[in-house]
Length: 442
Image 1 (cartoon, rainbow, N blue to C red):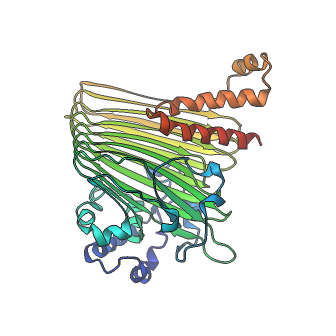
Image 2: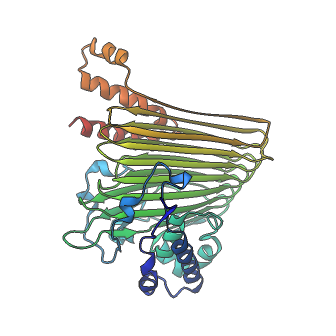
């Protein structure tokens, strides 16, 4: 097997480029062209590439995608309530990667806060974009970064000045609408740029959901820069349509004393890969990277993380829990890198998976790569089944077997949810897990 698949959509970039939004912006056009060239050369990884050993993109590559064009009519209330996070705050809503102003709500913003759609930021705050867009990922080799950069049309720009605080959470809503009839499946490439100045604070929620039974590709890229003492809470829900492909990449850089709290819940899509990378570049930086993946039928859910301890005195903690039923396939790949000068590092990682059927499968690959000697680091991974003794205990107290199983699964996932320090942020995820358990029983 070759190490790369053909690059989807790459052969059409020259044709598509003049139709892409903001094609006339010189520096952005150059960034896109350079990214497209790298992407064409690299293609998409096959399982021969170690980082993709457990996730095969052959079905994605075999799908003939087209860039999303006209906005399909959709109302958020047409989605089941369980499809999105229940969050009160500023809302930027996108349908097939394009801003829907009528579904968005931006209230008055505090002093020092810039929050705009990418399309509008290019007109009003081009300086922020030209200074930061592409900088966090400029040395990263990842074809989906290049694909997103080449073909992105819209997204979100959040910039906070020193000491600024975003008064309410930002809720990014991304809806994928599959095509009908003979139309090609659509692909869209949202972008998030978040730059928090010294001691700034913000909270971001993402809800990714789908309408329709057909395939589509959502490939989001987030670039996050946290200056000294800044704090970002970043929560993601992946609840795409069951025939959808979802590839998300988030890259964060943390200066001294900065804090990045991240949680991701994956319950949707046909194939999903959620990558989160954090580089701890200043002393005292802290990263909490947690999540859960709940799979049914033949879903493939991949959680891949990488934490780079580059300097002394930083800490990181990861807890991921998986529950898989039917013939679902889960993947957890987590790596903690401790560089030579990163003494007094405190890094811990744990992944546990629960298999509810004989056909379910999980691949776990926890890694520690340590070049310093004064560190406290640990990692572990376990795979198991429901405890029959615990089931018997609950049934002996009058609880039917299905309800007993649901109680044990919910308690199992709760360990990951408990890593969300913000109780208000934890609640919508608890409701979604409860909804998933109920739909599984139904």
